Amino acid sequence: KYEVTNAQFGASGHWSGADLPRESVNWFAASDHCAARAARLPTEAEWAYAARGPDNLIYPWGNEFVADNVVSGGNSGGQTAPVGSRPGGASWVGALDMSGNVLEWTSSAYEPYPYATDDGREGGNRTNDHTRVLRGGSFINTSHYLRSAGRVRDIPDGGLSFGFRCARSLNSPDP
Image 1 (cartoon, rainbow, N blue to C red):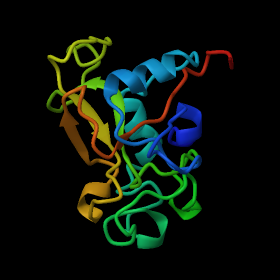
Image 2 (cartoon, rainbow, N blue to C red):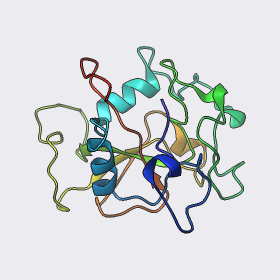
Image 3 (cartoon, helix red, strand yellow):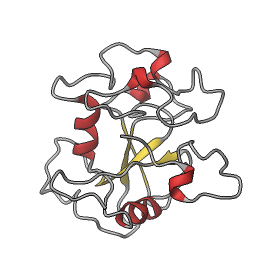
Image 4 (cartoon, rainbow, N blue to C red):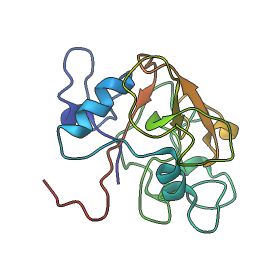
C-alpha cells in the first residue's frame, strides 16, 4: 500500500524523517530489502495495474491531474512528504503515492512495449547489465511524468530520488 519508509529501511545519518519514503536507494538494496521480508519488488506490469486499474486511468485517482493528490515539482518544495499524506491520490486498490514522492523501482528490466512476460524482462538478473524500470514520478517531476503510464529507466546501481515498495503474490503468507 505504501512506499518503504526510512524507519522500515533502517536509514540513518542524513535520512531523517521516519515516515518519509526511503530515497536514493539502488535496485539491489531495494530488492534485498523486500526479499528479507518474504516479499519482492513488483514487476512493471503489477505496478502499472495497481496504478491504472482495469479502467486504464491516466493517474491513479482518475483521468484529470489534481495537484493536491500528489507530491510533485509543483508543490513539494523540493522534498519528499510522509508516505500516505495525500490520501486523495489513492489508486483503485488503495495504494498511495503511486504518483509522485519518489520514483519506484520495479523488478523488470527495461524493454520496449508491447509487454510480454517471456521476453526476458522478468527473471531477476542481478547484474548491472540491464537498465531497470522505474514508475510513478517523483517530488521533482511535473504532471507529464506523474502519469500512471509514465516509465523511466536507470542502471540498477543508480538511485537519485529513487525509492520502492514491496509486493507479495496473493497466495503468499504474511511473514
